[in-house]
Image (tube, rainbow, N blue to C red; front, side, top):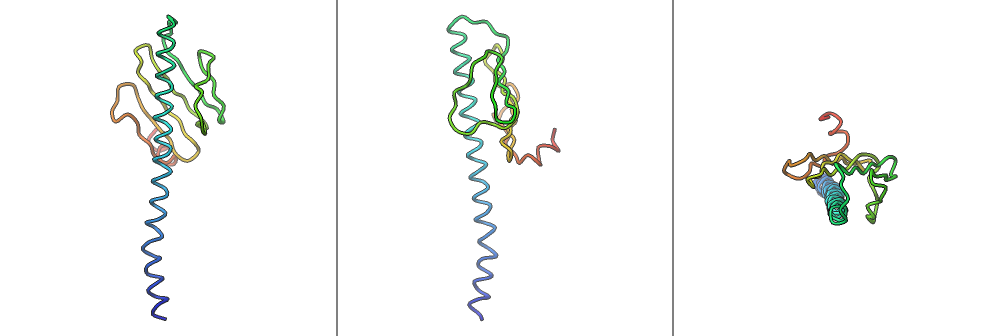
Length: 128
């Protein structure tokens, strides 16, 4: 009987810790994906500049996981794309974004640091 009580106490302590660790890992993976997308957007911007293409702003839009852009090119990123949102890069190479993957939302404005904020979607709905 004592063994069962001790095991129940150990589980009551460790299960929330394990679940929190898993949730933080998922959040970190989404944040890493967003950073990779920002780098891909910056790379495409540099390509446009080097080719002499003048654009005021490049916009990548995501609707239901489908990507479109104002320049007619895909980012070519691997993995899961955002479900909805936009990534913008202005004529000075500054990136702004508001995207989500169904679980987390990432927000970033031009020239604001830290580079981005990632929160669960429910939390972000109250901030907007």
